[in-house]
Length: 229
Image (cartoon, rainbow, N blue to C red; front, side, top):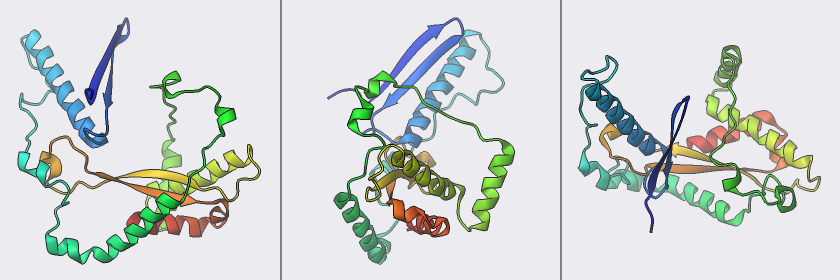
């Protein structure tokens, strides 16, 4: 019923700020970033034209190469019918995960009373971020390699106990509650660089209870196996 992509602009003495807002019905994050890249490329080209010159760091004035035929095949993920049939066993495991997703109700980080009258619009589009030092990043990467997993999986295994402790401090009777992390998974394959902005993404739902977090090695291995699946 409405436009699925919007751009908001504001100008101040320090410069111009653009906020791109996408509905997931249009595209995933990677598709959105491709769109933003095209917009900024056009901006740089127009800036060069207005000054009758092309900035040295701007690529030639060409659009991203798009193959329209790939859009119709984006849900096949490069697999033939036989390859899809061969993966039925793996898909059956995925159905178990879908059933668990439907049957489990994840707990909110804070109850309704604690949240009060907060709404998404009261803080949107603010975000909190932190930068790790180079030494801290190296230490985490080393720890992940020693465990035979990825940095992403290691961080997931560290985040879950933090969330559990946060809830425990505010609700002592929450051991049976499910904590859920939604992890986006890019499903693009080699050659999809020419795919137009679209959704080619899935979600992995990591569900754990407090009892699942006590054995850190088992927790990390379970997350690794789930993400591999």
